[in-house]
Image (spheres, rainbow, N blue to C red):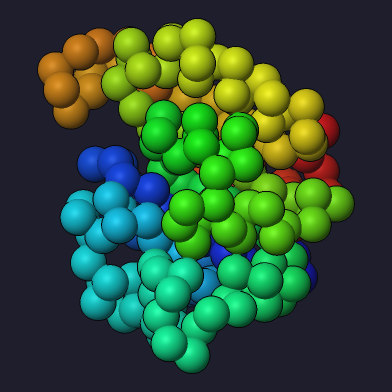
Amino acid sequence: MSKSKILFQLSGSIACYKACQVISRLVQDGHEVQPVCTQGALRFIGAATLEGLTGKPVFSDTFTSGRMLDHVNLAKWADLAILCPASADVINRLAVGNASDCVGSLFLAWDLKKPYLVAPAMNQQMMAHPATQESLSKLASWKVHILGTGSGYQACGDIGPGRLLEPEQLLEAIRKAIAGALP
């Protein structure tokens, strides 16, 4: 497998801990991984953890001095982008072109000829909501690769679909995207 430059974006979800496992494995496999976080993600996982895993500073604020063009430059730099975990909030904002944070800005700057993966993670009711389902369909119509979700016990105590896929499943999807084997 060729080594790739991966833009790994995290949004606010308890499932951020699984994303860290995936990031660690990607780095161990020799990929260059740039972490990007919403402010919500940074409430679940610290920037120090992500910097320690990747060796790169976390991009989390579009208006940080010296990083004003990172949303454009990182979109050009990366071979692949993944939003993992993808919260209902961020999925719905991407579907309407909201660029109010670094993840939204990066999405609008992204060349959709390159793989962009979305790995949803949310409560079953949020996942089933018509707004979320419509947004996922809209993103898929733009050739964004929507990964499935797991089903089972959720942090809130509910049981149902919406769980982030397991790290091995996420790694397999990323490997397929790198190989050009995603539909």
